Amino acid sequence: MESFASAFAGLPYFNPMMMINRSETCATTKLLQLRGLGINENDITPKFHRSPENSPDLSREEFVARKRVIEQIDGLEATGRHGLPWLPILSKYEIVKGSAKKARDWGHLLFATATTNQFLLVMIFPDECNCGNYSHHDYESLTKYHANKILCLAKYIWHTEQSPKWIRATYLTPSSGYDLDPTFAVPQTAGTPLDVLQSLNSHPSGRYFHIDITDVKPSLTPSETERIDAVASHSSSKEKTAIKPEVRKGLVVSEENKADAKPDVEGAAWKAGVKRACAYCEVVPHGKVKLMACSRCKLVQYCGKDCQTRAWPAHKHFCKKV
Image (cartoon, rainbow, N blue to C red; front, top):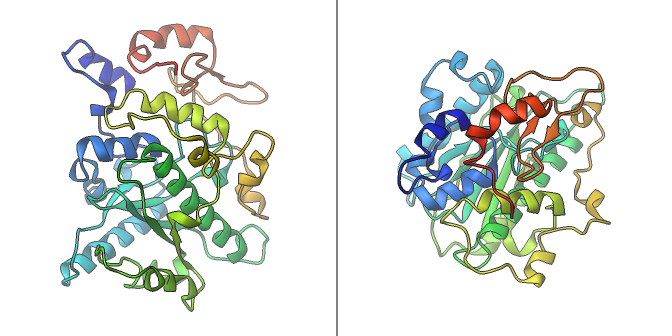
């Protein structure tokens, strides 16, 4: 993406945030683009009008499940639901570029509306089993964790200007047919009482959750906010005022307590490390070889100084130190 975008770098008013990627995995980038370019430009529905083979970032099973969910949400709008439509903006994401270290750190299908302050999150998991890796306990924990975290991110980015209100989240499995309860995607009406919205938390399945902005728990880490600030420095839609210390305290955990921000999962599958490829040669290192992060922006990683040097002509348009 950087190599392609660098071809336009010489044009007047060029900004990296102008480049829309339907397979974007950085939630920070996508939320900033949501305010800067509008919901329709960020709608990833067309991605699921094509064959699964055209989306190498998702397995066939992941693609089919997400397509099924998107069609259901779209069907609710077609049957006469009032309010702004829910549109998918991310199909698989990490909170900010390079932040996912374990399998548990990936969020799944995220929806928003033109208000950009209310969200739906749908996590897609394998069926529960007795192997210890896939359980309702872990699925509930991961779903709440990612819902809470995306709300913290939105509040961190937009702490004064039309800050986020709430997020509704659920998880689906193959045995459920990936079927959603129609009450999940509530109409976008300003007058819906909070107690009505929060009644989702008592859903009989135990798989549906509603989190209000007043109930979020600090879940961003200091290193994540450093990366978030680096990404936001490119955006014209970022907040013009600095975040107040008391607001930051409610969103960001201290360095000493960052372990508290991790989801409570027991399955070994969720603790597996994320293997990344070099941002230039796209080779995944083996053994004990570790990628080195760009010392300036800390957003991209290379397998060595040679690749970093070769990547610089394209990367320099995106690299910014805060």
